[in-house]
Image 1 (tube, rainbow, N blue to C red):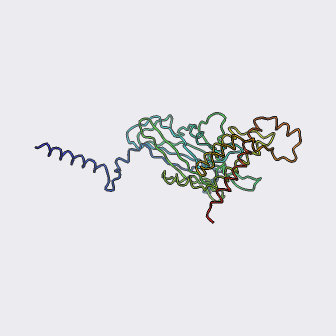
Image 2 (image 1 turned 45 degrees about the horizontal axis):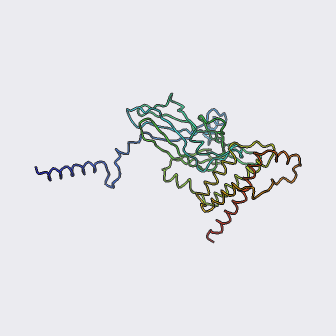
Image 3 (image 1 turned 60 degrees about the vertical axis):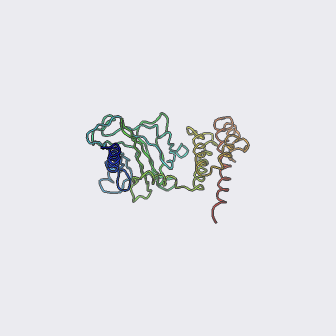
Length: 335
């Protein structure tokens, strides 16, 4: 056979192989999609160690104390996967601190938390085996001082020493997880967490999302909403640093400043430089905490506490600048 004929047959054979690996629309076939090593799910399960929840569960009432359990299934029917590890990549928006002046959830901290299977010894999954990781417990509680209900979230796992593991949930959050294993591709899974405060609804609902939908939901805040949130958080910290006796929360106000700077970069990039100036030159807004009834001895004690005074100076300076940003952005809104 001439060389040109051999070459033509080779090209046709190559095209045939390519066609078998793709669908008519050009997408990868189901066989290739099955290269994912894991199937990742999430379920809200009753916290049966809680006596009240045990009664609700027996009577079929909506749960007030539920666990968030993550299921990881090895999709390989016969192959064992070693060193299976789950990490939290992000929670958006952050959950609030508990108590309120403590730091909110921070993604860099969440990624350092370590979780283990609750129903399997070790970190390996046999072929087609399912293991479960308990991520957190959500419990509805009554806030008597404010006559309202909120949701306390207690994370499980091993956390870095000294870091808070209790937070207060908002109405909705987007949770992004990462699962890795030896010799397999890293996978992500996204979930929408809903925390209704109405007593007739369960305290936790979970819906799995695609990565595209998760990104859209997590970013669905207007610039004005984001700035108002930063101001509200800053005012709480300002009150703590203006006091003499309140214990100072760890990593503050640095964590709040970094969160606010990141927020401005996402929503109001033109104002970041002046924000940085307000942080580094806080003394240009030289002022004192507004405490009309404070005795001179108490003020002297506050003034002598350099950490408390330095933190308050920065917080006060930023809180004076953020309303200016808000006003400028508001002026550009359509009438």
